Image (cartoon, helix red, strand yellow):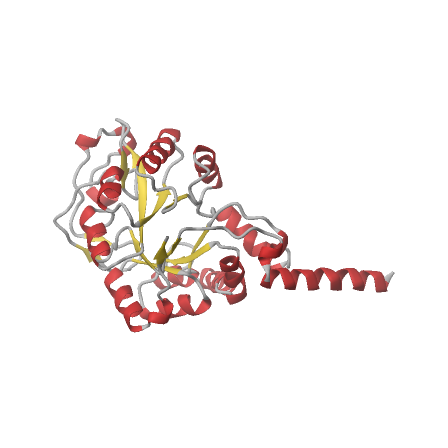
Length: 317
């Protein structure tokens, strides 16, 4: 009985190890039309007011490969770019985008705290909440990463309609950390690459460390994960106690795995880490093998890539 069990386990481990290095034997490689090394988080939230046209233009002028943006829908059905539905943090007004017509949206406040840079704020003159159509109009060939912030069928439908109208299905990534929202995005338009939601990312980690990932099909196309060290550094909730920091370090160890990232890259899945704002973190992310780094400091990241061209593997077909 022991010998057959040893043979079975040995065969499974050998197959898993082989398929980990050669995933296209079992899975068709995804054919994404872009490679993005430089990603501007909310357009570069530490250099301009977040999610504004000025921020996006500044990032584009630097040659960013991807704009990471967040979308909501107004009461009158306009898809707009904003991280929060409740505008109190960004405007000081206790209004919800979903309950307000576009013409009545308040201006953003300046200065504004930068979410992932503790103790940092930014000022700006462009304080308007932009429409998604404005972003597509001005940056027709730039890859855009859209976080659908709320579970709203009209929002998902409107974003999909605009993607189709502007023929952007090959250069847009969308979804949410919520599996429910991401599934709705896929149902609405299966031709747009999907962000891997949190539950799926957790499943991928579990399967990797149990040797099962090489056998597992992955529908989504973009593995975009936080570097847990970031939360440790800025003392976010659940990470500012000793147990929390230990847990954060453990998550960091699990995610920052070269073999895992290489396997996902080999399957044609886009891999990126957020939100990294120091050269040390840039270096660590690229060294672990991720394709893209998402930052609040697009100028700083551009300088780093110019000084380290071996990490810059950007292209759009």
